[in-house]
Structures are given as C-alpha cells and as structure tokens.
Image 1 (spheres, rainbow, N blue to C red):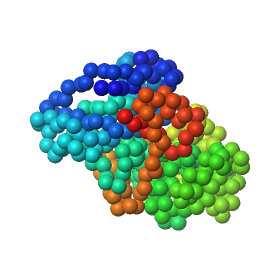
Image 2: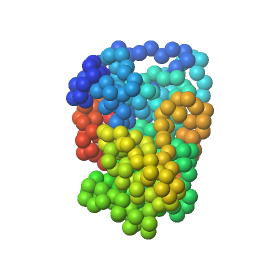
Image 3: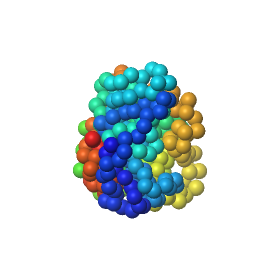
Image 4: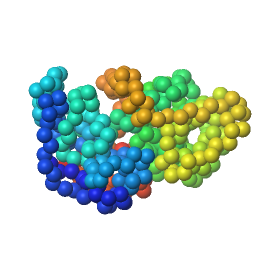
Length: 323
C-alpha cells in the first residue's frame, strides 16, 4: 500500500510517500480502501512532535478517512464489501488503505462525497458538542465565530444556523470572509482590519450571547469583552499559537461564563455518548439541515504541501488528501 510516513519529528515537508507491505486483516477487523483522508491542524502537531502524545517513529499521520470496504473479517457482522464508510482512526489515515475495528466505522450519508465524509467528523462533532452539550444556543441569540473561514469555523456557522442562532463570522481578512457569507453568516468582522469588540457590539446591539473561539491569543481577550450579559466564551483551541491569559474581572462582569471544549478527549472517555452525538450530526446531514462544505483536495503525495498550506492559512475550509 502507499502511505505518507513521518520518519522524524520535523516540518511537514519532511514527510515521505512510501510503498509499504499491505497489512493483514484479522478475523475481527475490516479493510477499507481509502478514497479521501482529512487533513487537520493536529496532524501537523503530530509531525512536529508538538502534540501531547508523541507516537513512536516511524508513523503514518492522519485521523479521518472515507472509503469503501474491501475485506471483512470472518468474525465481523453488519458490514459488506462495497459499503461506503468513514472512520476516525487516530493515526494511520494518510494511506490508501486502513484496517480498522468495525466499531470505528460509520456509514457515509448518500448526500456526501468522499472528501466531505473524510473531513466533517472532527469539525462538525466539535461544533455540535460545543453548542448542544457544553453550552446551548437559543433561537435568535447572537453567536460569533472566530477563525470562521477554517474547518471548525465553517462547521460552527452551519451548526449555529441550524440551531436558529444569528451568526457573525470573524476572520483575519475580508477575503477570507467571502466563503463565510456564502455559507450564510448574518454579519462579518475582519479582525485584522477593524476592532473585534467594537464591531461585534455594533452588530449585535450591545454584545454577543456566545463567542466560539478556536484561535486563542490576544483575540480571546477582545472576544470576552465583546460578550453581553450572561454571555458565554466557548474555548475550542489555540490555532493562533498562544494560550491566552483571560482577565477574571471580565468574566465576573455581566455574569459571563468561559466554557472549555475538548471533544476528542470526551469522545474517547464516553464512546457511547459520542456515538449518539455523531449519530445526531449524521441525521441532520441526512435530513439536509447540515451541509458540510466540499474540501480542497491534494494528491496523497502532496501531504506536506497540504499541511503547510493549512498552517499558513492559504486555504479556506477543510483540506483532504485523495488516493
């Protein structure tokens, strides 16, 4: 099989496309031909050795895949050759085939293409977890999404609109906000060109009800200050690189709340609850309520370039590798 291999902790350009021996398929496993692999920020952290878990070298990055079942172990029921499936695999996804436990598999909704299926789980499960489990969003509440043109940002716009919220997309530039407008944002803030707090307060008539923050850094302080009475700052990550130090007095003022969201850790600790959550997301997609965007596709051999473009924010939305 062909796979992208990390042989040393380094920059994405150090990744190598290698021809490896095809793995066996035990009786309790399923083999999947991978048509598309999702590319995420966490993959770059793994490759650089900066994630909290450092896998043993060499390893194959990639955690999200979509493809067709090509072999079913003798002890496995419920799956057949040719089934369209998607899976979260932890590591090993940047390859043209994977062997997985059947519990990892989900059926791909007919409305989704391979790229959509391979890139929607992390972003949409994170957004759904944030807005239905960690906090709740009421119809007509004002919700601001930072980093709105990224994968989690676009998913949050989609989920928030489905829940009835009025969505303000915030991104670094007017150019990056175009896709957010196309995806249905009710208002936009280019925080690289205008002050975030003042513009949010102007658009909302006094302050946002919820700010979803996957960026961190100095933006988090402005986001917290842009909240109105009983506003919630939902902290998802620190894609900007810096972990913010939030002023506690701004949390106290106007009875604000700061909520942490770590869907990945929660999903591993609560697999049954997570299965229910992902099932809810897929049902919303089946019913046409949610509509994951088509990702930008790169050949498997260009995984390093794909990760670099992701890190440099040269692409809006999600990225996938195709084999």
